[in-house]
Length: 192
Image 1 (cartoon, rainbow, N blue to C red):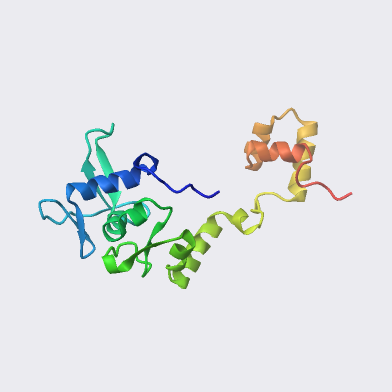
Image 2 (image 1 turned 90 degrees about the horizontal axis):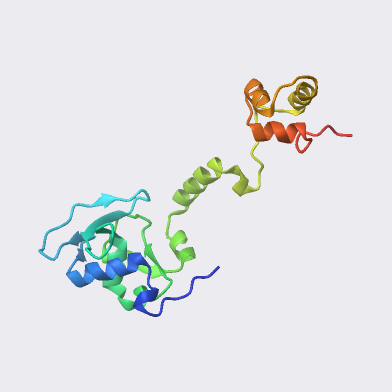
């Protein structure tokens, strides 16, 4: 689904509105660091994503402080309305999220942004993602705790005892939904 291009100030994301506010107040990027309107270099904080961020007080917002990303301020400082009123993302040409020098900042598509990351780093990130979520590769995550023999034993216990699915789950160290799927022959079916 493609996002619509913002045409007016009201169409801008909160992040872009806050970036514009910071710029209008006099915050600037110099040598990759944020300089306050008083000429002091701000001490950076880091978002979970690894990007540098800083905050400014905006009394009109309910939580009082708006958080901005260094690279967004750099993009607005370098490209102005071309970035502000577009669907472009901010690119770090060397793939280093912490390098916010204006020479390293470009705007472009998300695909271009991903290609800015060095190949080895992209492969490492993909390995982390696909290692955590094997379904993304199209590979069904294997439940090592169960097989067809255990499933048959579970079915037998379900028929011959008064154990609930929850009790069977505790006994076999499986989730209740897994037990229900086995008992109702949705998974681990015996080949007929």
